[in-house]
Image (cartoon, rainbow over all chains, first blue to last red; front, side):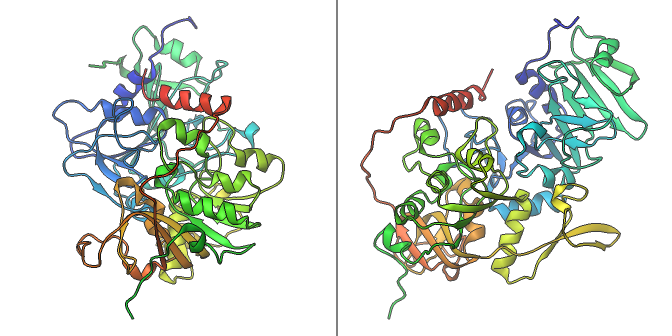
Amino acid sequence: MQKKDRLDRQTVALRVAREFKDGDVVNLGLGLPCLASNFVPAGREVLFHSEAGVLGYGEITDLGEGDLELTNASGQPVREQPGMSFFDSAEAFVMIRGGHIDISVMGAYQVSEKGDLANYMIPERQVGVIGGAVDLAVGAKRLIVAMNHTTRDGKPRIVKQCTYPLTAANCVDLIVTDIAVIEVTDKGLVLKEVAPGWTPEEVQSLTEPALIVDPHCREMTLM
Amino acid sequence: MPINKIIPNFDEAVADIEDGATIMIGGWGTAVTAPSLLIEAVARKGVKNLTVVANVTGFGKQVWKPLGVKFAEDQDILVRNGQVKKFICSAPVSAIYENNFERLLRAGKVELEMVSQGTLAERIRAAKAGLGGVYIPVGIGTVLEEGKETKIIGGKKYILELPLMADFALIKAHKADRWGNLVYRKTSRSFNAVMAGAAKVTIAEVDEIVELGELDPEVIVTPGIYVDRVVVRPAVIEEEEIEISAEAKESHERFIRRKGA
């Protein structure tokens, strides 16, 4: 069972992008979340925000193209789009902390069953990167975590209680992993979708807290 | 006498920075957004025991040159030269590899105060605005709350964060006039525009100097009163050959790989 196919990074990003609605202001965090600007469904207008100081940017440019003075949170050059605007770091965080961002997408090391988020430091390293994660975790209206379901050595990243230092407590709304989509609710974690070929039981076996299987739980549709 | 903030060269622009100074370095994290030549001038001057305020601790020429960046040095040069006593920043280390700051931090040779990026920006803005501090809603229940005053306002808990003022702010802008009015390019505004005016002396490194009146008043981002000195990058620089270490090569390859499947 452990050998089952998991979704690759691009596909997880594609699934995340399906959460974006017309007019949403979306901040994409470092790493995998940044890929989601490539997968906005055709005809939908989504405004991507980066704490680098831009609103309304487009897809990541092809290798060797683009302008290093126009980047997403990963420092990757992105495309210009009509209607985009630039601003400084203070303004970028006024938007974030003032509640003007609809969705924040971030990576994580661990998420607890209460929606606590740990994503700035691996304890063994003794130093991490807080960046803007803590601001986004508190300021964004909805927080989506996009991550691998387990660590490299197969341990669950969705845990009863985070053992890594917290970025913020009780802030995650939805977890999209390489095998499942899980909603954080007052009653607990609700399994909404499984990756193609996976069963709810298999997802549960790789998740520490008990999952509530949604009666409408289904296989992810990606297109 | 006409106001003229233009300084002829980079060494002169930083000549009065002394040992123990607190300096802000603008930019967001990539060398293209950093005041690269001002940083190199501070490195040449050799001042020590600096407290540096910046978003990141830097990665160095080794990382940026392979990406085709022309002015590729960042604050890493001050770190690896042992000129920094303390760093106040939001991203002290690299997600990809061990930078020089992390190495020196482990060796106990440099101090760190890590601040969330939003708080860093707001503390700098508070200094520029003459405020005694700001109540911030983030960091509650985390290490960022430790040892700080808190207050309940409207039923919500806030942390008091104090202003961050520096002796010198080194920033990068695109164009300037002799009054110090500045415009930027795209995501280079970042901490550059925030830091302008948050120090006793603000020094702007620019790509181009234009005549007074050439910058449209409707689009000037940093009014000249925040800027004390302006110094322009040379149009051509001598391209030096640098040897890229195996670590930097690996970091570059990982950066490239992150772009796609």
